[in-house]
Structures are given as structure tokens and as C-alpha cells.
Amino acid sequence: MEQVREKAYAKVNLGLDVTGRREDGYHLVSMVMQTVGICDDIVVYKTKDPNISLDIDYGGVHLANPLSAGDDNLCAKAARVINERLGIQHGYFIHLTKRIPVAAGMAGGSSDAAAVLRAINRLENAGLSTEELQELGVSLGADVPYCILGGTMHAGGIGEVLSPMKPFDQVPILVAKPPEGVSTAEVYHALDALEEIQHPDIQAIRKAVEDRDVEGLANCMGNVLMDVTLPKHPIVGTIRDKMLAGGAVGSMMTGSGPTVFGLYKTDEDCRKAAEMIRAAGICETVIATRTIADITR
Image (cartoon, rainbow, N blue to C red; front, side, top):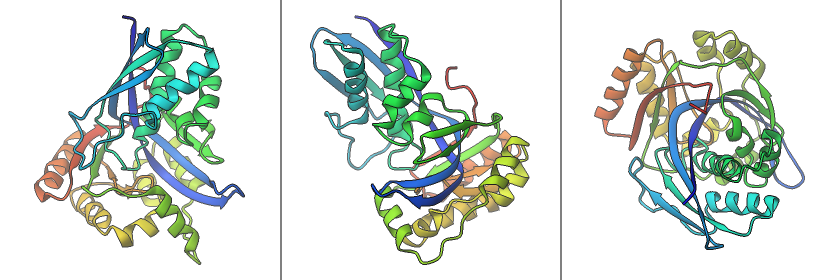
């Protein structure tokens, strides 16, 4: 049975601003996106059966309620989308090993979908370009085009207008997620209800990232969604404060939360902070890793 394996890497937002809203309800954003060294594993097998089936291994993720392994899973949707594009009649069996926290603001589902698109493109020797894969991806979710490539990028539009930046790789980063999840739709709805919004300086964030100025980034990085997530999920602030007290140069929520990340000067500082956060017993996932530039390794 022919098969292809792909890694699906998580992301964090080093900066996230919401700049408007389209008539169709989608929010316009300005974000600095960064891949981190936490990944799901995807293996796609060709099958004679025309159907698409999915198996999920939760070895690295704790969930109160398992993800759907049906047709509504983004992996299955991605397989159908590229099958239709290529005119393929046979099906696939997809084995997904989860390590990226779920409902965490780290694009786990989007990255899985992107990995399936890349895998089937290779498996079928289809030769679709990165741009063509990204066009397919945007129909699945706004983060999928970014996840096709990963690395350090600015994202505009609804998240699909991408501008590569100088790699911000090999920076020690600690990722911590509390047990609760956050509804992205509810967070954006709450943001829309605010009369005043404190917008982060995305240009300053971009400059700090491209200058590889970790301390400068810590001083200016911001996430406009944190203002609405924090009051409903105060654990986000607790984790941030513990990271800062434990030596983080800077700490912030990623995406719509509730995951919090901290940037550190050394891997040793990052590991010590991870031990401290784990000992506090307030998070279900605590991972010391690094930012990465190349998702193919």
C-alpha cells in the first residue's frame, strides 16, 4: 500500500491585530505568524476503497471529548478538496497522531489539513505548486495557506495574504495550555462588541522579529484578542505572570487562546520555566521547544 508521511507543525502569533470586518462576516487581520517545534504526524495511505477514512491517536494530547474522525474533520475535508481538484477516484486512509493541543490557538487543525494537502500532492505526483495548494487551503480555513509553508510570515486579509519575513528561528519558546478550551467565534464576537480596542503595533513587531531582537519584540508584541479572552479565562493571565516571573523575556497568548507562550534567552531558562509551570498544576500541556524556520525537516 502506497503511503506518504508529513509533519504538521503548530504556530504562535507573535503579533495579532484585527483591522476590520468584511460584509461576509470574516475579520480582516494583520498577524506575525511563527512556526514552533510541536507537530502532529500525518500518514496518508492510498486505498482501493473510494472513501476517505481517518484514525486518530491521542498519545500526546489530553482531551475530555475526542475530535470527530468523520467527514467533518479537516483532514478528511482536505483530502476531498484535493481529490476533486485532481479528479482522483480512489480513496485514502489517514492516520493522525495528535501532539498539538486542541482548541488552543495554535492552528492544529489547519496544520493537519495543510499536511494532508502536501501529502496527497506528493503521493499522487500531482505537481501542484505551493500557490495552488494554498488556493485549495483557503477554502478549508484562513490559517491553512500559512500552514502549507510555515516559518516566519506576515498574514493579512483574512489570514491568506502572506508575506515572508526573515526567519525568526531557534528562539527558545515555552508553550502552556490550561485544561479549558476557547471558542474562536465567541472571542471574535466579544471583540466586535467592544467600544474601544487597543491595537498592537504590528510594524514594530515585524521590525523586532526581522532584527532578531527578542527583547525588543517582548516590549512591543501584542494580541488584540487577549483583551476579550483574559476576562473570561483569567488562567491566561496567571500563566503569563508565572512565565514572566520564571524568567521569560516576554509572554503572550497566541490566537484566540487559551494557550500562552513565553520567549526565553536560553534553552536552560526555558526548561526551568517549564518545570515550574508543570509543578503549579494549572496546565494540561507544557512544552519547551524552539521556533523553527523549515517545516520540511
